[in-house]
Amino acid sequence: MKNTQVNLIARPVGLPTAECWQIEETETPELADSQVLIKTQYLSIDPAMRGWMNEGKSYIRPVRIGEVMRALGAGVIVESKHPDFKAGDFVTAGTGVQEYVVLDGKEAVKVDTNFVPLPAYLGTLGMSGLTAYFGILDTGQPKEGETVVVSGAAGAVGSVVGQIAKIKGCRVVGIAGGADKCKYVVEELGFDACVDYKEGDLRKQLKEASPDGIDVYFDNVGGEILDTVLGLINLRARIVICGAISQYNATAKPVGPGNYLALLVNRARMEGIVVFDNAANYGKAIKEMAGWIAQGKLNSKVFVAEGGVKAFPDTLMKLFKGENTGKLVLKV
Image (cartoon, rainbow, N blue to C red):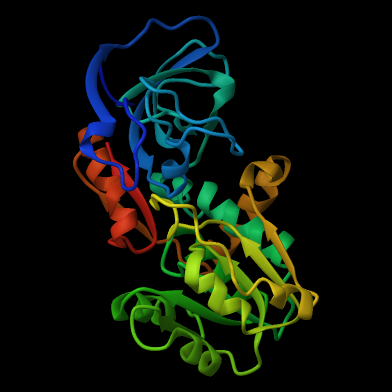
């Protein structure tokens, strides 16, 4: 069986280019005992992918040169030599950017598509949703009546963060790029307000949208937006550092917060979140979020890009061009 895959062959400087990738066709290996063959149906497209392409220490090793690009995927079991799986079972796994993958069965997670569509297990009920859940609840610790501000509010993580904060009784303000995204954040996701960082004075907009100051800030973008928010935080504020998409393609040293002394003045806390630290509690989180989806409290929007595995390089760029609303996945 032929397998089309995308390999990383050069580390990018700035935005990834076509020269970073090699698309090749390989033979699918035979299964050994306890292994499964998965046909990938959807790939999760995440900002974290840009970091995985870089050399250097991080929370996970970089993708090696010549290796299949790392990606989370959702698909169907084609063949199984593992007792817990049979052909036709739907699963999620670290598939990589390829049409087929052979894995040990313990690396796959069976999912129920009778409840929600398969792509949702890469979004709200997948890594982005789990990142949002643990980041806002465990690290942000929002309290009823507080003001929560979320950057990247129309994206996969930010959209879920804001909805969970609303469920917990907070005033929620999103930051997004463009009028259409801000409209989506308020009208479809139920945020109280959304400011467009591309239009006007961001600090003024945030002050107007957050008249009582900011108690929790969930940061997905870094850079100037983080700096601006720090100037508006309240006493004992919590700053959750989830991502910094504005800095991922920088060719110079990333820009850090010049307003960091606001943390001292306000006795505030800034803390990073990596979802893998919460693996023991994934089941609990998925169960609770699935309940919210069933109750109509949690909107699970997926932006599906077409084109198959070969479209991966162009689809990844949609993240950095801000072309997606909700969770971005590639249909294989």
